[in-house]
Length: 119
View 1 (tube, rainbow, N blue to C red):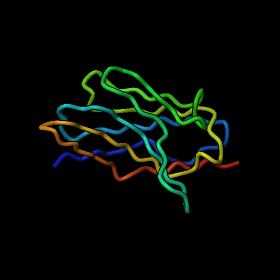
View 2 (tube, one colour):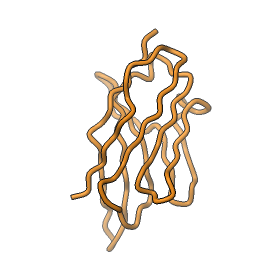
View 3 (tube, one colour):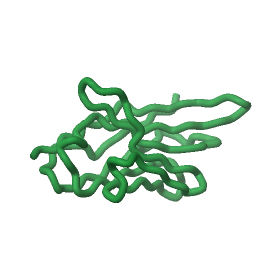
View 4 (cartoon, one colour):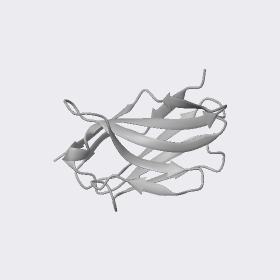
């Protein structure tokens, strides 16, 4: 069973930076996209950033210009560089990998890492 393990969360002051990492326990075949989602208390989970295997990226309007998603060469790890953090960025951040093979979609989720931004 493939596991995604996030790291890099923590407590930071507003204006600070954090870099989240998400590593797969083994290689995932036929990846379509790798993404970061976040869920704040009392709110629905929202998509923060996504990167395709071709390197195309897309961001939520609220993080454009501040966050950057990237992967390593093996595509086994996805990163989220978060700069100019704001208190409203406080949430549990989850990584997600979508794999499509044999006409089926496979969704892999990490357990999440807490990001807390103090004002």
